[in-house]
Amino acid sequence: MIWGLFTKKNPAEQQTESKGLFDGLRKSSSKLAEGVSAAFSDAGAVFTKKKLDHATIEALEDALLASDMGASAAGDLAQAVAKKRFDKETDSNEAREALAEGIADILRPREAHLDLSNRPKPRIVLVIGVNGSGKTTTIGKLAHQLAAANAKVVIGAADTFRAAAIEQLQVWANRSGADFVWAPQGADAAGVAFETVKRAKAENADVALIDTAGRLQNKTELMAELSKIVRSIRKIDEDAPHETLLVLDATVGQNALSQVESFRSVTDITGLVMTKLDGTAKGGVLVALAQRHAIPIHFVGVGEKAEDLRPFDASAFARALVGLA
Image (cartoon, rainbow, N blue to C red; front, top):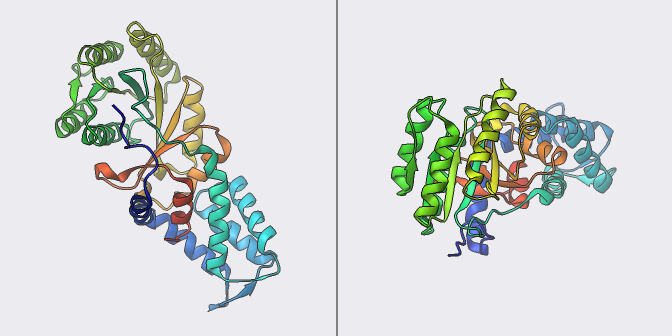
C-alpha cells in the first residue's frame, strides 16, 4: 500500500497548505513583519524606499532575534540581506523577500517528507519528547491522517507514567479507528511497547505508533527506559524502531535547542516535529534548530485539528514566517 499522505503535493494542494501555514504562523510573522517594518521607519515616518545601511541591518537583526532565531542565525540572515541589498533603495517587502530566501536556504537541507508506507511492515515509530511537548496529540493526528489514507494503525500508550496520556491516546485511537494497546498507570512501558509491535505484526498493520514518557529531569532514568523499550521491540523486529521522532514545543523558544541536545545524548533521533507554532511568536526557533542540528524536520503543528499537523516545506515555512502569503 502506498499513501500520498506525506509526499509532495500538487500545485493546488500546495497553495492550500501554504495558506494554512501562513494563518498558523500569524503570531510569529506579525511580530517579525512589525520588526522589519520598524527597521524602515524613522521617527514614526515610514519610508516607501530606504537605502539599506548599517543601522537598518542592525534593526533587521534585532527583529530576527525577537522571533527566537538565536544570535547565529539572525546574524547570518542579516548579513545575507546586506550582501544582496546594501546601499540600495529597498522597502520592507523587498527585505522580507530577501529574508525568506535566506531562511529557506537554511531550512531546505532539513526538509524531509516522511513516507510511512516504506517497508518493512509494520513501520514502527517511536515518539519521544518532554511531557507537555505535544507527543500524544501528534501521535493522534498522525493516526488520524494515516487512517484517512486507508492505513491500518496500532497505537501503543507506553507513557505509563501519566494516566492522562493514556486517556488522551484512547480518544484519538477511537476517532481514527486505530487499535489501541495500553496498561494501567505505572505498568512496565517496555511491556506495552512489546505488545504494540506484537499486535501490529499479528494484525498485519501498516504502522505502529508508540508513545513514551518524557521525564527529562532524570536522564539516567529516561535512558534506561528508552533502552529497555528498544530492546523489547527488537525481540520482534531487530531493526526497530524504524523511526524515532522527537516532538518539540515551539512555545519554549530557545529551550528547544537544549531539549534536542539532551535527547540526542540518550537515543538516536531520525526526525523532528515542531508543535504549537500557532500559539507563539517564537517560530524562528525552527531556523536555529535547522542551523545547529543536522536532523530532518518532518512536520510542523499549526493548530488543533488533525490536518493542522503539516508536512514541513522549507520555502512555504520561510515565506509564512516573514508574513509573505
